[in-house]
Amino acid sequence: MRSPIGAFTPLASLAGVALVVALALLVSSGLSGPVDSTIIGAVRAPELAGLLAPLRQITELGSTLAVIVVAALTAALAAAIGPWRHGAIGAVTIAAASFLNGAIKLAIARERPALLEPLVQEHGFSFPSGHSALGMVAYGILAVVIGRSRLPRPLRAGLIGALLVLVLLIGLSRVWLGVHYPTDVLAGWTAGAIIVLLYRSLTRTVSREPAPDALDAPDVAAR
Image 1 (cartoon, rainbow, N blue to C red):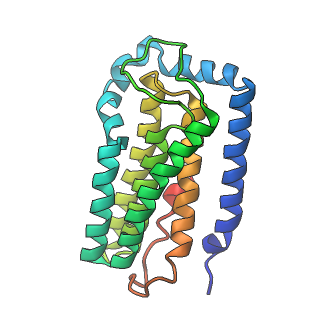
Image 2 (tube, rainbow, N blue to C red):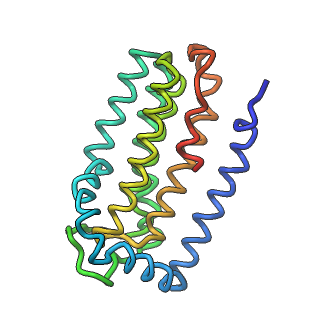
Image 3 (cartoon, rainbow, N blue to C red):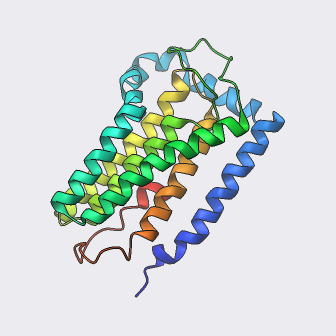
């Protein structure tokens, strides 16, 4: 029997595509400025500086090197706890997502924020946020693999929850550091979530190995 979440995947993916397109149009027309500046001002409020300081390290978990490590970990973890095919496909999907994100950046060609002095230096275009998109894809796919594994249910739920928090913090870090607009991050999260949902749907029939009581892990991407 097909699960309600499985039936919802095509609709959620289409809604995600529509949101990314809408954000791209807003950015291209300059209409996203007021929302972006308001959120940036709130995130960079002086009273939050100490609380958000760890984001300087957390942001590195969405870097290209970190994502490569996660892709390898996903493949290795799936090989160890099953299903291994999902891990192999996941690693390839993460690599493909990197190229797709770069193509979108070139198409939109949005410059980096100039509203505040950035706390780190980044090069290239701004929309969508590569750290946010690739973090969502890498950790989202890892969450799917974990959710389909034979690990105890409480452990799977805890790991998936931790990965969700990590994805959110990586996106927040890009705004706090001053290298991305909030709309860049939202577009990155959404594009990444679409890829995770498609990965989840396409790998459902690849292998019959997952545990019978496995969680529907891709909730991490749908939220």
